[in-house]
Length: 124
Image 1 (tube, rainbow, N blue to C red):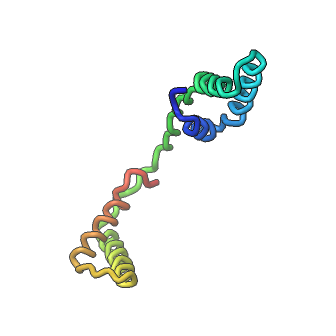
Image 2 (image 1 turned 60 degrees about the vertical axis):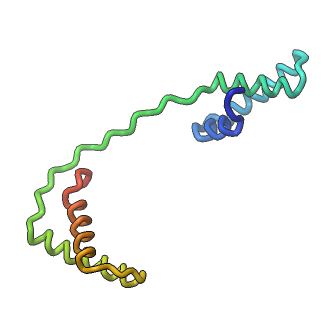
């Protein structure tokens, strides 16, 4: 067998095909043993067959996001108010967690956070 039995098992479990593949492997071992093959060789041959019979599933395309509604741009006054709120939260969080942040750095971080959320393409 080229790949690891553990990796094959994990992949089949992730694909929810392990119960079926496990039964098939047991059937193969039993069949090969009945044909006179030794236990170790039969087990190895069964794993090789399972690897061949259960190739990785084709990845499915992600579900497309529904179109978002068009939202009016945020005016400067609203953005400034949001900026003050976010900057206050950042300041309190940093103080609570013992992090010293300059007012300039706090302002820059708040500006980045607000800009991200206000201009996010994924919002609806």
